Amino acid sequence: MVPGPGLRGHGARRLLPRLTGRHGAPLPEHALVRPPPSSFAEGLTRAGLGAPDLARALRQHALYAEALRDCGLEVTVLEPDPAFPDSTFVEDTAVLVAGCAIVTRPGAPVRRGETAAMRAALRPFFERFPTIEEPGTLDGGDVCLAGDQAFIGVSERTDPEGARQLASFLAREGLGSALVDIRALGGLLHLKSGLSWLGGRRLLCVEGLLEQPAFRGWDLVPVPPREEYAANCVWLDERVLVADGFPGLAAALRALGFLPLPLDMSEFRKMDGGPSCLSLRF
Ligand code: CIR
Image (cartoon, rainbow, N blue to C red):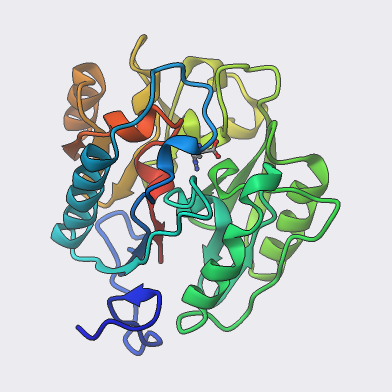
């Protein structure tokens, strides 16, 4: 592996057909991650859980990247960027569908500068780079891709105009979109703070989302009470990366035939992040 400027790992355009998992959906083959920077504790948070410990966060991040590798993904590790304390939450900067990387315009102004480096990092892998434009705002954490359907959260970060722009880009790529307004659900920062796709027509979601009209006809798996933080997870066919310490959810996943891979997320939780926020997968 040859280190390049600002980029560790390697990348090339996909030449082989994508692998298909047992649920018939294409599985990601690559993940892009960025370790937390020295300024991590200066990031945005409303968790009220205290300041994160950087050394511990770096260890947790390394184990997270290792778990993705164990699941067969090739992982590209970007250099940490202290200019952007929240830049480890790479998911918020782009929405990826085959051939197309939609570059976001994060709702928090202090995070807007994160997208330039991400656009450059994604360039080897994607052909089209439509971009959310002012006045729209959109965070990738508000976008739950579920096969050829996208659920787009309207939140304190993603506004209706950003959601509209994304839905129109996704329509060009053959995906349908449904909006889910979570602004009245004060506990959720992003839609995916409370929702994850588990393949096929199955969605894992917190109680407050169960009655959303957008999810009618979907098989909803409720997150057990008091385990809401673990709703944010990463489905990788049989395996699911989940936050450690949520036994009810792990048992529910096992009962459905999944193998939960628990990861210590304590330092990222302090900054309002979960497993999906830490990578872009494609
Ligand atoms: C923020 O408030 O933007 C970060 N501290 C946390 C972002 C978490 N990202 C995500 O859920 N996709």
